[in-house]
Amino acid sequence: MPRAYWIAHVTVTDPAAYVGYQAVAPKAFEQHGAIFLARGGTAETMEGKSWQRHVVIQFDSLQQARDCYNSPEYKEARAQRAGACEASITIVEGC
Image 1 (tube, rainbow, N blue to C red):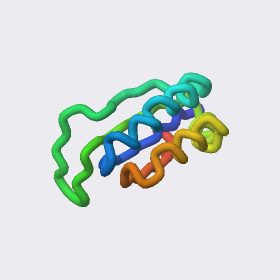
Image 2: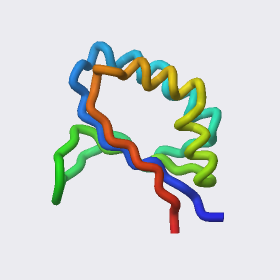
Image 3: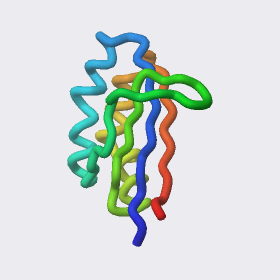
Image 4: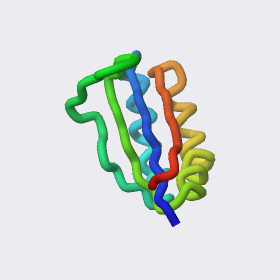
């Protein structure tokens, strides 16, 4: 079964409010076996919109990635970040 990945691009617009997301989100990731492969390191946008942060998270399956995103814990995290950032999150199945 191929692994799956969250690919997230984020620009924080309100750092003080974003702290709430950072406090809550790890619980969802821990509960769903997430492994962070990239998180906010140095990045260079070659094409497209430039984002402040880039995150790649590995999951054991597409269903596990979906379950994490739709979990009550991550719903709470999304509520915490509402209005604190612009974000694009894609779930993709690996090769």
